[in-house]
Image (cartoon, rainbow, N blue to C red; front, side):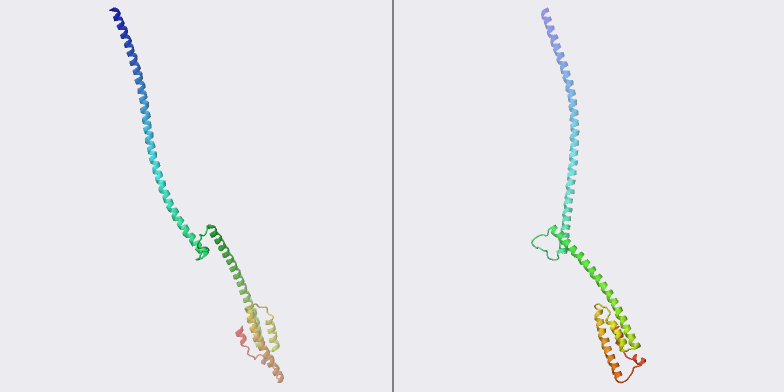
Length: 238
């Protein structure tokens, strides 16, 4: 009995020791699981926060993408409107450059062709303006020359008229006619000079014939008689 009790006690001790070891092991495992659970819970919380932040970021990015799409759509509409205006402007430029008819009705005009045509039109306009300015300058110069010639012609006619009123002898008139004939004139005053010379030449011939007739009749003109001829036509010519 003593041996049995002793063996039983030893068995109980071993069992108790094993139970204690098992309990200690379970306690340690429980503590480890608690720590792991705490760490896992922290990780889950952190991941949940990250997921929430990512969701918010994704939502924000979606809103930004939608806004960019709307802006791009508006830009496309603006670009289409701008292209339409540019095309209308281009058509107006082509019409103004080429006129009503295009050079090739079955082919579109390229930008290079349009640029070359605009350059040509610009150069032609510059040349036209230069030619116009040159003609205006030439015309102004001719007007000044004509005015000077008219002054010289008027002065010569005034001298002829004064000579006729003062003496009116053929030699004096011939001298004035010679002076008028040798004046350098240019059109249109040149034509007026010729007409005036024709009139004065006829008057000079008539005066010379009249003086010769009077001399043939033995009549000598006095100084007062020489101024009695009527040459009022010179006033009209002048």
